[in-house]
Amino acid sequence: MKRPVLAANWKMNNGPTAAKSFMDTFIEGFRPKTERTVIIFPPAVDLTIVAAATSARTDVFAGIQNIHWAEKGAFTGETSAAMAKDAGARMVLVGHSERRHVFGETDAQCAKKCLAAARVQLPFMLCVGEKIEQREAGETESVVMHQLREGLSLTPNLISTEFMIAYEPVWAIGTGLTASAADASAIHTLLRRELRQMIGTRGNEIPILYGGSVNASNAAGLLAAPEVDGLLVGGASVDAASWLAIAQGDISDEL
Ligand code: PGA
Image (cartoon, rainbow, N blue to C red; front, side, top):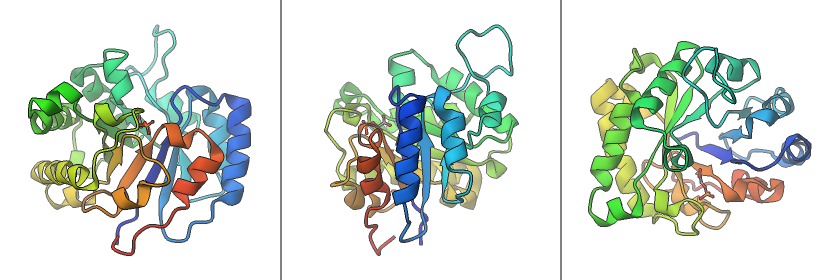
């Protein structure tokens, strides 16, 4: 029986006032029917609000969308792993497609961020995914495996490090196009195989989430697919009612 992970990535939406009202609505309405974990990744300025709103729950927690790899110093605009943790983050997204493709983040930088998170015992969620031209050129597997291996390459003791993987095909993010459950499952299966090669049977326990235009209508079908352990949701997670429908939605008995 899987314990599905349902993660909301608000991106640059919902400031502190909106975050407070979102959390009031969500926490009030969210009564899990089965065991599942919910993570909310708000903008950094909302972190303390989301963390405070979830403090009485064991099934819902806050994460941060990005960190810098340095511990502290002259890095205007950045947040360290320790600071994020101090503000209530219990997970960090690393290498989200927008970080990679809008802000030019490299695999080497992702590796440093995973290491920085692991150093302060902040679990991380490494995001991988191919662009449409890479998919069309038949390069999906090599791109995604490269991102996985490089992203994890600096973290020592991976076998005892808490982390998750999110597979988010770039062409599916914010476009309304979703990978089919079978396509997502096929890539997740490859990721799982690679994780097993890296860390043995512990690789079976690492949650692998799918992301890319997930909404309340397609969530259950994707979650039911083999090796899909959870969902990372952007656009459909920004509004409390929409997110509640996904987080609270039926999860197949097959899980
Ligand atoms: P989307 O975003 O659900 O809006 O496609 C997913 C993500 O970027 O994590």
